[in-house]
Length: 254
Image (cartoon, rainbow, N blue to C red):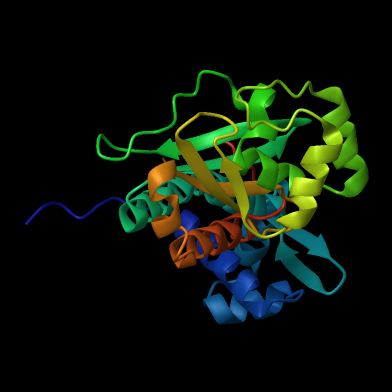
C-alpha cells in the first residue's frame, strides 16, 4: 500500500463551497453555505473572502454567486476541445463516404480552410490555390459565402478577384450569386476548382458562425456519392452542435 496523499483541507473546503454555490443557482448566504458544508461560520467567511478576491466567487445582494474565473475556465476547456471534435467529425464523415473531407469558416473577412481529413484511398484535392483566393470556385467556399448576410456577401465578392481556375469557374459576381441562390442548401463545385473533381458542401448550422463542411470526389463518382447526403448532413449537424456548445467566444479555427 502506498502512502496516503497529503491533502490541503482548506482547498477541499473552498472547492466544496464553490460546488454548493453552483448547485444553488442563485445568491446563497454565508450562513447557509456554512450549514450545508458543515464548516464553521468564521472559516466559511475566510474562505469566501479568498474566493472573491481570486475571482472564483462574487458577493452580490442576497449572498454569493460564482465569479468570472470558473466561467472563463469552462469556456477555455470547451474552446480547446473544439478542434479535436471538428477532426473527429471529419474523420467519421471520411470513413462513411470514402472521400476527403473539409471544413472552412469565415474569419476576419476571409474564408479560411480549418481542417482536412483524407487518406491514400481518398486523397484531398491538389490545393494549388489557397482558399482565400479561390472560395468562389469551391463548394465549401460557396457554402460559407452563401451563408453571409447579403450586404457582407456582396462586400466580400467585390473585394476578392474571381480568377478563372478552370473553364467552369464563375468569374462574375452576377453568375456566382445566381448559383448561390439556386442552391441554398447543398453547394456543388462542378470542376470549378479542379478538372476531374467535384465537391459537395453544406453550411454548418451554428449561431454567429459562418462555416461549411464538404467532401471531394472524382467527378465520375459524384452521381453515386450524391445519392445519399445523410452522412454530410449529419456531419454539418454535429459540427453545429459542437460550435454552439463551445459558446459564442469559441472559434472553429485550428
